[in-house]
Length: 298
Image 1 (cartoon, rainbow, N blue to C red):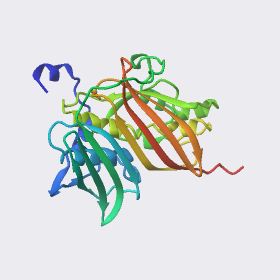
Image 2 (tube, helix red, strand yellow):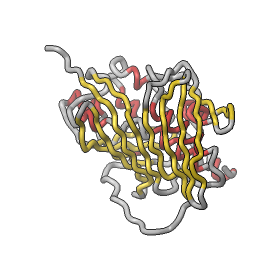
Image 3 (spheres, rainbow, N blue to C red):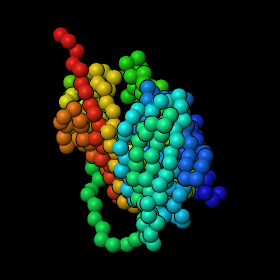
Image 4 (cartoon, rainbow, N blue to C red):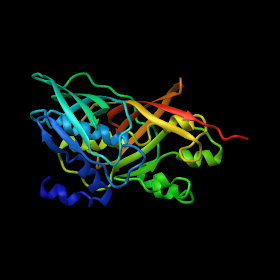
């Protein structure tokens, strides 16, 4: 980052520095890297961390400034948050415009996760996109901390979680809707890194990948009037895909607009779109998760 650009970027929060540290993988062999967990962890490895670290590992094996344009990931086992994760990259193709990689994550010899990543030179062609939803701007909305006031005991996992991003809900989050007895078939959240990011495009792609796993399944719950932390829900990501459409900076506000078209067979599907402030569609996300609800006995 040049001196002028650096001066315009806000200082990074401690949690954002921690996230950037997670992206600093240790190379332990040819096309093999070691990723670590932060101090703030849940019961298993956060899916967004696996996607982001695998994306960084794949990107390190691609020559030149060829940006990622798609990742398709499958979650096989829950990661042990006390152990590092080994990422092994297979180089499947290096063409004039495209590069294709497969990344497999291991712990103790067991496969946790597998992801295909595709990289492509930027080119011109036909362009169109859906419009950004009509919502209030982030400056007009309460912070995530404001929404957690009064819920600290019941939502301890959110209060204690790593928070490398600023988040502003344009609608009420799941727990507020639950207490109000309301349902909602979509979710809209403004996000940006909590401080300035380096200019490298891969950092912004990895940050978006990490954030894409934060609120994407919310609409599955709010469609049924349920909430994380307030209902007995067990959820785990099965697969996660991202398509990157345009260059972007993730230290600038982006609207993450998600909805759930279907839930069936103990699985819920959610789709999401990231838009810039000026309405450009920069990425599309699809995630499927196992979601089991255990209603309280009466």
